[in-house]
Image (cartoon, rainbow, N blue to C red):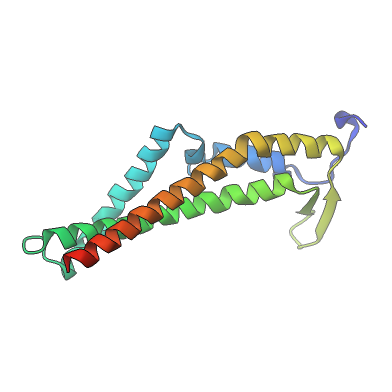
Length: 166
C-alpha cells in the first residue's frame, strides 16, 4: 500500500510527525535541538536569571559579607533547581513525542468530547516514525539525560561543599 493512498483518520495536529515538527519549532523545546554550546548558553541564561530570585533568599540565611562561600553555594544550588526544572520539562516534552513516534498505534481525539479512538499505523508510517525517532528524537533524549545527570552531579557536589563549609 502506497503512503499516498493511505487515509489517516488522525487529525493533523495529533499526528506524531506533525507533533514532532511543532515541538521542534517551538521556542522552548527547540533548545534541545541547538548546538551543544547554544544549548548550554540557554541553560546558563536560565541559571543566571534564577540567581536573581535565589540570591536574596540565600542572603536571608547567609550574610554575603560574613559567610560568602555558603551564600554563593546556596544561591547556585537554588538556581540549579530552576535549570533542573527546565531540563525536566524539555525531557518530558520530547519523551512524549518519542513515545508517540515509537508506538504502532495512535490514540487520538476526533472532537473535543473525549471520544478517544485508536488507529494502527500502516507499515510505511511506522517505519518513517521509527527513523525520525532514531535519528532525531533519541539523540535529544540522550543529551537531556546526560545534562540532567551532569546537573545532579553538580548539585551533589554543591551540597557536599556546603556541608563541608559548616
